[in-house]
Length: 352
Image 1: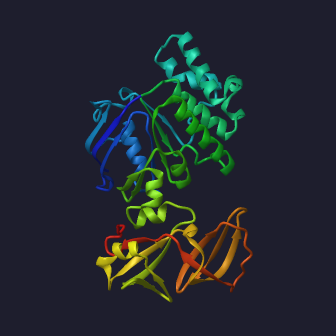
Image 2: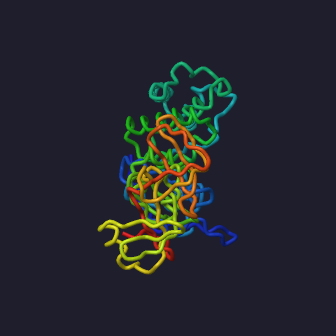
Image 3: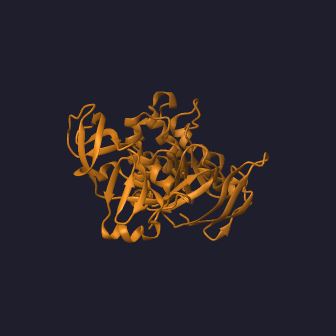
């Protein structure tokens, strides 16, 4: 497999629209990296630059110590799995998986061994004589992965491979990709707009917005210590609650509520006394208490948890309680915040 170094990658199209700005990252051999962000944030463009499907406007791409910035895709030893499977309908599953090796005129016996080995890994052994139309969406995506596996490339690239699957298949195939990574020990880069995929698959996540990298870190780092307001709002489901609050001595004053600060939070906000900041609280960090009142609008029971939507003062808020509840419109629930995040109003960066 391989390590990658992305140095100051930029992508500017002919109409002077810049899709990626100064992307820098070192990827270790065998890492599973997930690029996540909303549509148009530059994540797929970055993946396509690595694959050689998009020219790199400036910067360098280094694979295993070799600069491949100007090399064509066929010379980069990279395999890519696309969203739409890209299978040949007239070929059998075996023929689809063997196709790239056949084009290279590899020994038929070697091709046969590689296809059978990949089919065994992906649970496709009994499907090899079928045509793609006879398979489910999840099975077709596994065939696309099998076609990449038989090439034994240095790097695997996945461009939103699960977007066409329903929720149940998406979850099952996600687990198969994770098992595949552990089994192969391969270097993988995976693009998605689905934060659940990012949090469950990644060794490290690259969160992007408007062509810029917002934060790189482990799933826990992005969830627990978001670098800025964008990462905090994008990572986490339901999303983090936000309140504009004025910092006073020992407390935060919001629209219709006040929160007392502990000693650690006082120290964190000592330079912001008299200023307005953005307070962030994850739904699961709103717990039953007596600090503020949540006025209920609706109640969603999800089995082991309940989402309670309403208002805290003049702000919309969602709480995630770890029990089944039956709150209704107009109910008032006493709550407290057991973990708070603070963000600078001007820079939107986290206040540490």
